[in-house]
Length: 110
Image (cartoon, rainbow, N blue to C red):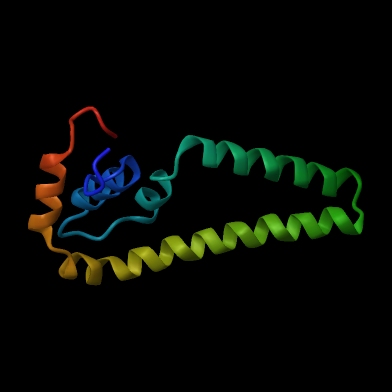
C-alpha cells in the first residue's frame, strides 16, 4: 500500500463524516457506528458480571459491575461529546479534500 493512501479505517471514518455533512449526528447514529463485535463483547461481559453480582454478591462482583458501568458511562460521554463538537468539526473540515480522498479510494474498500 502506498504511504499516502488512506487505510480502511480512515476511509470508513471519512464516509461516516460525509453522511453527516451539514447536520448534527444523533446519539443513535453515533452508537450504531460501533462494530457488531463491540456490542457483542459488551453485552456478554455485562451479562456475566450482572449474573455474578446477582448470584454471588461478593465485593469482587460489585467491583466488576462498577467497572462495566464506568466503561459504559465513559463511552456514552464520548458519544455525547462528539455530537456536541460535530458542528465545529463540520465547519472546520475541508470538504473538498474529503470528497477527493473518497473519490481516490477503491470502491471495494469499506
